[in-house]
Length: 136
Image 1 (cartoon, rainbow, N blue to C red):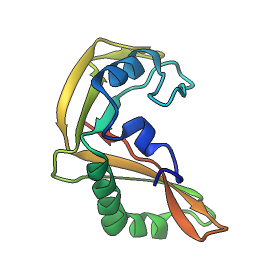
Image 2 (image 1 turned 30 degrees about the horizontal axis):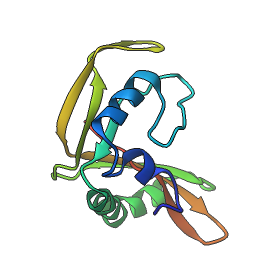
Image 3 (image 1 turned 180 degrees about the horizontal axis):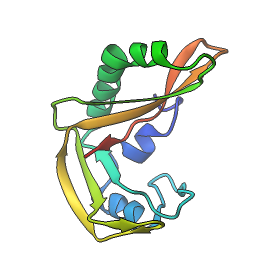
Image 4 (image 1 turned 60 degrees about the vertical axis):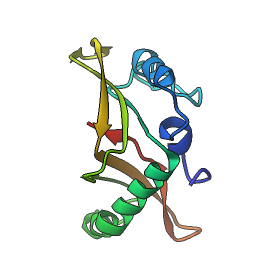
């Protein structure tokens, strides 16, 4: 999965609460990348790399095929999301926000929702996981 995208570096089990807080405030992810808007609406991480992989498998096995079937022809990037019913991770979410500004942050635990972006690689004929944050 590491070769496929940024999931482990930005949302994996080794991401600390401090890194999540910094990302929520500044838009700088644990891997050093920055968001284009200068902040991120939520900053989350899985409690372990294993939970991230399980969440990816859950989406692939239960939702990805339907998303591909329902996509417009030629689609190369698909977003899939679901509630797993399993506590996956934690993070920081803004209590309120205005356009371009993040509000006060609230720490949240017990996140069960997951969303993933899959990108089609025509050379390998596979859908690769590009990003998979968990969400509120």
